[in-house]
Length: 270
Length: 368
Image 1: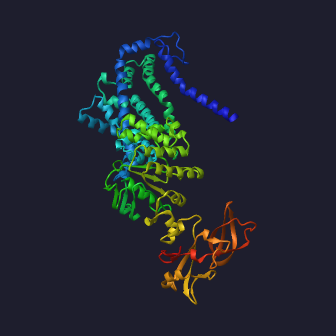
Image 2 (image 1 turned 135 degrees about the horizontal axis):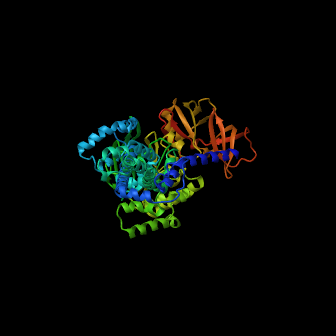
Image 3 (image 1 turned 45 degrees about the horizontal axis):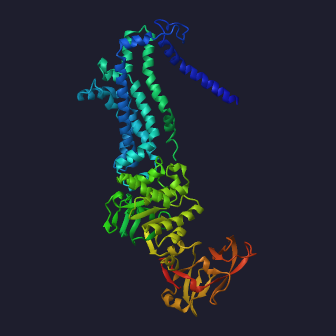
């Protein structure tokens, strides 16, 4: 019993510690200039104001950046799920020459850090004429081995007889994928969708490199620009952060149920 | 007419592993044929080749007179019921049954009629909106059968459909499938490793071992006239007893077991078959039900044995004993007071004995 209380106490303390910066961000975003830079830090805005948000929306084209982030994250997620699920399913259930070799080759690419590939990727996309377009963000995000691997592991647990039954029922390969595999893989797809959406939404370095025009910036990039101009305005910065963070929190909370299920599944072979 | 013909069908896997060798048999229209054999005998592979789920290495398969070697499963007009039911977990019972028809773009009203008709036959009407996980094993199996029925295929294939059910339900489903066969008048091919299922359900039975079809015959013919020792041992429960020995001609034509514990003379009819086997090693087979505690034939040989195990079944008793260190089992009337370790006299009717060539395992004759 005491052990349990101690555990809960420990968990409560760590969650509070984790939440403090977040609460401070929220509080500071509603403060007047200079109010947040005091020690010890204050968390509740007094007086309360929307000024920072007003300034933010005046100085930055926030709606435009928000739209960029939203459209890019959504498109990357949809395409990423489509491609990785197809590839993962194929690696799990189809027999073809060189399958093992190909899969291992892809797996081994996981050890290459993404920073290493940035320059060649940039040059490649430049030669294709995609720099400073949405395509510069979408194309590199189409698929990765992490997603393919996760879906493959999940699909392996789907019994072959289910696919054979569908085949006997007259389903084509695509119909089997679309009507049998995808519905069964929803938990893992949602998990990957969250990874992909959050990853694209929060990504800073690659959009900074690939997008050069103000109007193309995603929220994190736009926010970073704001930071350079207004280093002494932490309140304004925090308002920007809140605007950036809220959508991803909503997405995560909405899909959390599936997300947990997805992480658990596939860990045990049934 | 929806007959299925297999001509010299072989299946060789990539590593050169031959799992089916020259399978030849014909399933007549509206016939119920059971493929039976021990696990790994190639029966499921044979069924999967008929279904089109497994490629044929050589040979030909005809369904309804049409060569189907290169046809995909969906174009063979067949339906299959899988061992693990293979129901789509995300669909309701209704959707599971309607799936195949939807893919074929059958009219919605027609789908509804067919699904409800199948549900009625299988007593699934109340469960149409349930998901498979909310059904019992027997109900799931019925949904799997229903999914096959609604498509009105030429041939039904069953791959050990009852092996995941408990014993009682298995017996019940067995009769249901037999009834269904009569009701639908369809051609059915059924795979099982259970000889009781095979004997009770099949019009004819195909017995396989190590990828080779041993015998194709009616259940009673398999029981009475097995072509070899394997078939004789496989069909019948409890299984046939075997004892090896030699045929010799002293004063009369005699069988003597290896350690001379059992000897007997043959009838004149048996002798006519056996002359060429004098001096040769043979195996005799005695069905447990042909060993009795009463002397029914004056020619019967008496054999005293020590009981190792007694299994009273109520209406009959299985007794286990050894002859020449070979375990024997007899199926006799209830014994009364005799206990394990006790001695009992059993009578063997020489006319009911089966004889097999020890080398080839082939049946020498059957005196019926």
